[in-house]
Length: 318
Ligand SMILES: NC(=O)C1=CN([C@@H]2O[C@H](COP(=O)(O)OP(=O)(O)OC[C@H]3O[C@@H](n4cnc5c(N)ncnc54)[C@H](OP(=O)(O)O)[C@@H]3O)[C@@H](O)[C@H]2O)C=CC1
Ligand SMILES: O=C1CO[C@H](CO)[C@@H](O)[C@@H]1O
Image (cartoon, rainbow, N blue to C red; front, side, top):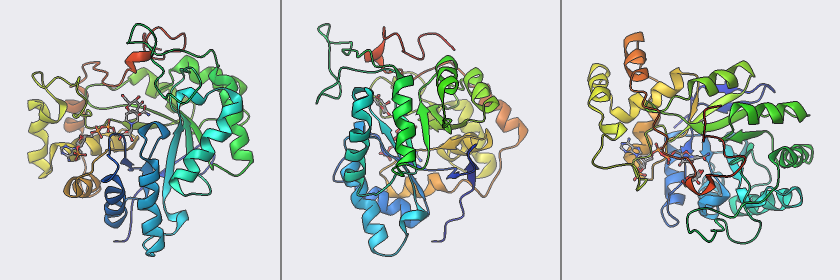
């Protein structure tokens, strides 16, 4: 199927497809097929990360679709993220090279610092401290990490660099030293958590917001099953009927109309298809107001183990 996805334009003039396939929690053995299905359906943007521990299989899916002629490398936008144990400047390039090898790519379209918090360097991606709840921190500073990210652009290994889970003060610290500005901040964004101040700050600075967990990440064990889950919120359910659409499609379309790039995850072919079918209708002003009114300041992905880190981004709103 030919792909007609609108793009968002970065401050450097490069573009990113407004919708991409998320891959967190997409199991090895399943994710390669999900990536192949997504590309067949028309997705041209895949969101990955070293810490998802499935980049090798994601890479198999992309390679298969390049090999069978469905796409060329330059047709697909691939993002990955530098994990928190690799922030120390001497580790950054090596971490990217592992990701490139796993993904079987010569370059990334976008590389993000996954979180502003750094953890103890080493093989353990989640180096747990003695309390069994808090990771062991590193004192690497993301500003020094950023200078290494810039070198990856110089070396032609990544086309664009950006941030993820950074608050406005942290973004400003990066902007203050940046020779190459971050093009985006990938943050949690859905109808229960708008992060209005942070997104306004990003917009003012010309930084594109990518919305993660747009469906409220229902598979996370701590998303309470006895409370209202976003996808089943009775207020949300009033909107789809009017458009003949499903709740997930409304939530994805909502992010796009907010001007955000959006990366819903699914390994289910029918959902991968329906999540992509969000360009043939428009939410009206009343719908947008109703969705905005669902705000609950409900953060699903706070990186619990980093509470107490001096660079934890979201312990207070910034
Ligand atoms: N930068 C960061 O720190 C973070 C980045 N991310 C990125 O964002 C992506 C999306 O966020 P994520 O937390 O995965 O959560 P999402 O909000 O995308 O929800 C994904 C879940 O919803 C289910 N689902 C997908 N489509 C539908 C549908 N149409 N109807 C009902 N259920 C559906 C999926 O199930 P199934 O797969 O079984 O179909 C899966 O369990 C991640 O995969 C990752 O790439 C996420 C969190 C943090
Ligand atoms: O991208 C991510 C997916 O979820 C993980 C577990 O909560 C996070 O650590 C990470 O930020």
